[in-house]
Length: 446
Ligand SMILES: Nc1ncnc2c1ncn2[C@@H]1O[C@H](COP(=O)(O)OP(=O)(O)O)[C@@H](O)[C@H]1O
Ligand SMILES: [Mg+2]
Image 1 (tube, rainbow, N blue to C red):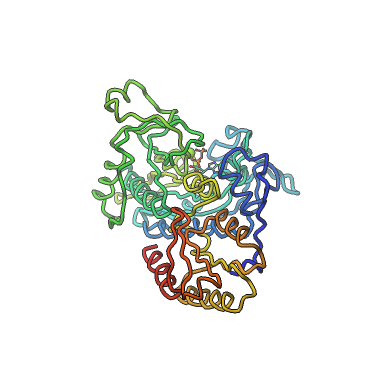
Image 2: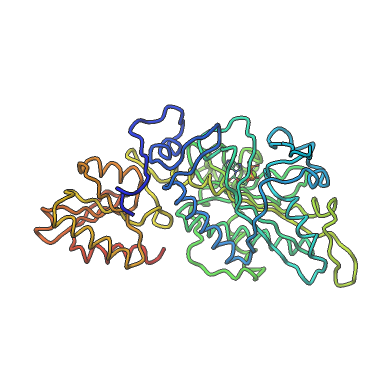
């Protein structure tokens, strides 16, 4: 992409309405535009990042054996009456009527639609286990939408639903989700810690939230500092292997880590030596939940078991806040000049800054770099505008590409360009060929 042809409406002024850094930077970097409270238009740079995050989530879900589908955003109230949630859901549900006076709603979550789909087709235990999921817009009429995409009213969520014959099988599905979530967040360069969450009326230790530590997080968190040393890394997990998935769950959830909803000070003090006790804030980027037959029973989602009995399936639902992840990524990766995307998820791999547009040597070298990077499968953003160097650097810093190649007539006389890391600010002079090779090498593992 050439910046002269792109649509990147960066703002010079800091928008007054934005209280936290990720919201400010997303507005300033021209990623989103507020259309009404808690509802955003996704501009090219924001949309590109949303797509990248979505892709990683898809890849990791598919790797875990989960099957993507797409449900409508608008649904009839009928199913929600069947599950018993229609009246109880409250003001967060956006309700409407169609021209025939039928009650409709904008899906805040989709247990009912998935359970209905399941019961329409699946009749035998032989077709289990099954996990289907979608990445789809949700609407919750939050009383206080705030912090930009972090707490929107319309937001993109991955929601997955497992259907299993027994509780044991459903707990394996739970563990599988935990493993796939750990992988997903780490691929984005994020550490998200599974913490025991409020399970509501169902009880038991059957739900975990994943929290990214950040001062601006909405949840208070209490944890054993040893937890932050745990890394999923590049281990290969066989998602069908029950013991292996259970092992990962134990490794990542045996130490004390809870949100303020479930925090128990006495247990915290009993389980964690004082020097390892941490109290902080976190952003909830996902949640996994086993809830047994809560929906399958009232909605008649049954299968016949090996003995020929009709039994309700055991279910769970598992969500990732896809659009919220953009905010979380920025909260965890920025400095006073702007965003710093991790290499695992960046809108463009490398920026090219031409210090003297119109200079034949500089223009030619930039074009060659652009071609060479593209040929390596990388996506550069070339700032080919007729602007001063300072402005070009400021834009690159603001939008946060991890690497920048700066090209100017003076360097070219010595046969070099400059490769700069956005994160460290360190620069290296290299021949254009070596710069391309270095960038390709950096991204080879991503
Ligand atoms: N209003 C919102 N704006 C953006 N993301 C949200 C919002 N509500 C929930 N999410 C994301 O979707 C994920 C799954 O939703 P869920 O656990 O049902 O939400 P909650 O815990 O708020 O009830 C959450 O972990 C969070 O990352
Ligand atoms: Mg939640």
